[in-house]
Length: 120
Length: 106
Image (cartoon, rainbow over all chains, first blue to last red; front, side, top):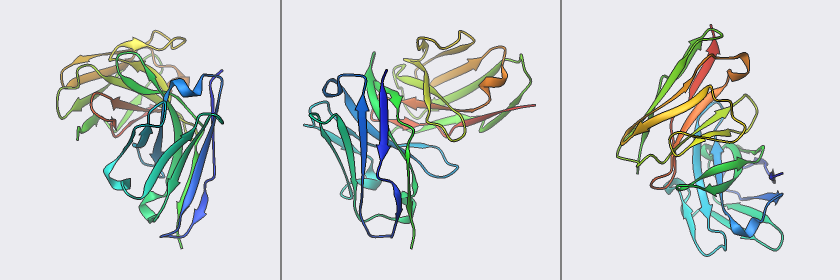
């Protein structure tokens, strides 16, 4: 059974940093691209970042470029999101998602999410 | 960037009704659209990918169709467990979600 479990969320002041982790199990982690998707309170879903299966390629939405860094440790089956220079508008639940492939890359499994609140 | 316009934002239905949600892309997305269901406090779950391919284990009352820029998602015979929010996702060029549709019981 595919399982994704995020951790590392909480309350952080504007301008500070936070690092999220996502522990994966139940599938061969290093065969899949992985992503982070966020959802602000009572709002819709937004793709944040994607990393290729081997970590060689990364992609970001414009609003986080230069501030967020997605990375992975395939030996530990773990995905990360380093978030720097945090802003109030980054407040959201952050989901780790596996990118499945069948006619294109979409998000096929999601973790339960971890809440990040950016506030002074 | 591709924009996804999803409508309606909310929908009220009776049990047994058929409901339809639409998503219009700002450009042709070549059928690369998926549909997700999200219940309060939970992560989204994948229902359909590549316009109309139903995920294993998802009931056949869920369906999708469309091409080019225009796509739709339907639930026939709405059941109480279908009360949730629904989102489309285009994955033809990067990834963009629609704004969501909240399905409520009439």
